[in-house]
Every structure is written in C-alpha cells, then in structure tokens.
Amino acid sequence: MDKSKEPSEAFPYQPPTDEIRAKFKHIFELGGPLPGRFCKIFFDKLIALIFLALSIPVFLLLKFAFLIEGWLIPENSGPMFFYYNAVSAGQIVPKYKIRLIKMKYIDPAGASHGDWRAYSAEWSNESRTHIGRFVKAFYLDELPQFYSVLKGDMSLVGPRPLAVIHYDRDLAQGNVTRKLLKGGLLGLGHINKGTSELGNPIYEYEYVDQYLKRSSFSLLCLDLWIIWRGMLVISKGGGH
Image 1 (cartoon, rainbow, N blue to C red):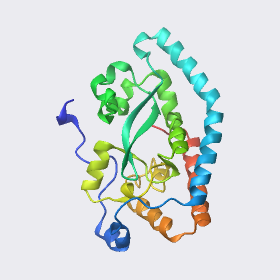
Image 2: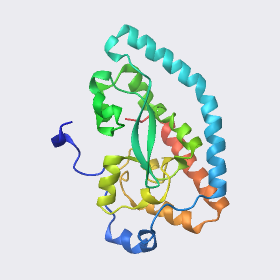
Image 3: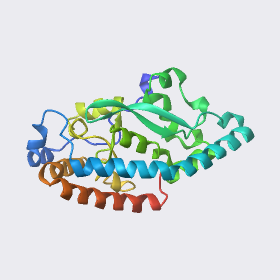
Image 4: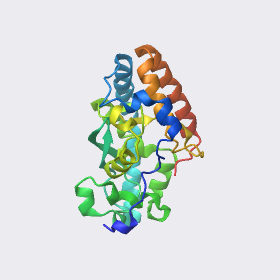
C-alpha cells in the first residue's frame, strides 16, 4: 500500500473547535462507551430484523444483476459482499457493505485483514461497476449494516462508524464521540450529506449531549426524526 497516497486527515470530520470543547466539556470528560438505552436498543433490533427480511428480494435482484454484469464484463465479476474493520463505541467491528468497485482495484492482502485502504478506490468513479454506481446512488451498499445493528455492533442512529485508520486520526485530532456511542446508519451529521455542513463535528456532540439528557423514550423520538430526515436524503438518490 502506497503510504504517500493515504489521506492526511480523518475523513471527512474536522477537529473540535474551542467553542465545541467549551460547550460540551462534560462530553470530553467521559471515559468510555455510554450505557445502552432500552427503547433505542429494542427499536434498533426490531427495525433491523424487519429491514433485513424486506431486503432479501433486493439482495437477490442485486445478486442476479451482479452475475449478469460479471458474465458480460468479466473484470466486473466477483463477490457481492465485503467488509472492512471500523470502530463503533471504541470497539473494532466488521462494517459490511455491498461491493461497488471492480476487483482489480481491491488490494487482496489488505482485504484479507479488513483494511479499509484495500477498498479506498471506491471514491474513484472509474473504478465502479455499472451496478456499483446504481447501488451507491441510493445508498444500497449500506443495507448489510442492518445485520450489524441486529448483532448489536451498530445502531440505527449514531455517529457514522469510521474505518480504523480514520478513527485513529479523528481521535488524534480531538474528537471523542465515536468512542462513546455505537456507530449508526444515520446520524445528525450524516443527514447533512451533500452540504458544506458534512464533516462539522458539532452535530455529533449535540447528539451525545441529547443522549445524556433525554429519557429513553424521548431519545427514541429524536432518533425517529433523524431517520425521517435521513430517508429524505436517501430518496434524492444523491449517493456518491
């Protein structure tokens, strides 16, 4: 792996400002993962189970499309699912996704160890398969993460889990939210995707603050609002 091509900062989050450190001082003083909340955990597992069941036809159709494209364009063939190691509540977990790119752009040595860098060509449009472009546009590559939610590795709502390399950099630049909460499919920051606000860490701190202050049911209501906002983003088909 060419170290000179690695990103120099945690993608895409900025370091906490002095204002964030002052306003959320109590969050920076926390030592480790926060305890789960009953309503949130119950809702996570229920919805994950339902969506996994509903996703079965989608997975079957995508698998068929993968096979057809691989038959017509051999260089685009390969497995549909993959994972790389990410961090959720300070713990390394597998982050499952649907493959978007051609196998020739994947480093097999890194992939065997769950290294995100093996798949970093995902951000280059020319590396993607035809099905991969469609899958990414509607965020379908994230569907396998409902399995992670069902397992308890992730939550429906929380700070987006970062690959280990990016988590380490994000932690080094001063952000602490991802060592406190499970990574989410959606988050207060993530619903700003496509705007200049994506990467502003204040949204992650606001969510942790609400996690600490709200009752279990009230926190679920906030999660439902974030999920609704996230669905609006997804419906626009703006994944990239």
